[in-house]
Image (cartoon, rainbow, N blue to C red):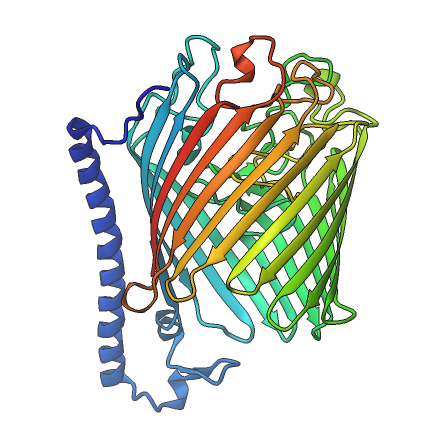
Length: 498
């Protein structure tokens, strides 16, 4: 394996650091200006209209009194987030290695609550401090970078300096057990989730909500019409958000061509969490992607508590059916094969001491009647056997098993996790069940997180190392190896939230 380039090129770092400094300074000036204006306005208001004047006051539902609308918005909350991400991939000898240093900062604002309503907005920018050529193809396989490009913009790998995105822009409403949110927002559902393994997460646009009825019953629902997947800086209609990432192969083995061709304007989801007793949780979820597919998941869970330890038992059943034309009337432009379906079964056995340590044994079986398809742009797999830096979406006839051990230090804010798994996939040349031409593999992870308290609270450091070893036959074709198996992937993340 080639030596990894862990250091930043000094010749370009200074210029990029200068650009970043100007961007940060601009944000700080805006914040300072906002608060300066707030203080000045308060002083002026105190001179012109006494704070006790009934003519200039109004009350919110939380019994807070505001002198005027400007005073109301000044009482909102700002939050910030800075993130540095180093990633490197060490491929098999002769294949291209890659690395990237990314840095980004964001700021968000939430207004005070007024009769249950809150307004939220946020944005984030990213810079490529230094990286290998992420637009170049590997000279042997002809394939492009897979991992590091995801730190930036997969649609424009040449853009290194200014990757800005409007993230949150929504209005929220809360009343007792009801919570509603409309607009651009973060979401964490079964099939659409942040998948926060790069610089920024996946976001959606639409209306989402939850309703809790006591401690036993909770409802989830959402109607979405837009998305901004991670590793992008744009917003898309929900159908056009599919196919931004590599499309793989159609069931007949020809290259998929569904990018910008999925004819769907919306999707909706609904979920129910029911806890008949404290130790049992039943979870039912359904996602309907108009004209593409319907995916249902049922997950029962049972926790058996002893004096200091717990035994967790979980099962999972997923059923997916293609809807209508699978996204397009033209067979070559479809996302899903017309009339196809697949059943998935999974299980988890976990023995743990809460907040100290846990050991998990997980299993997943994807049926052989078709491929499980869920846009990778939207989130990670919900399977019990999921481990970082790989997914089992796009495949059928899979048997996966893994063992995961995790531990939390008794005194230090230190968390560690290791895992090992075996994933048996169909022949990579069998496109009807293997969308991305992936061989069977062993998967190993080692992860350490450090989150201090007290003076340094808000800081988080994470180190993740992944190794994937090819298990199946590749016929000597290195396109089934490059950026897929026989590689190490290294990740160092330093972030601070305030």
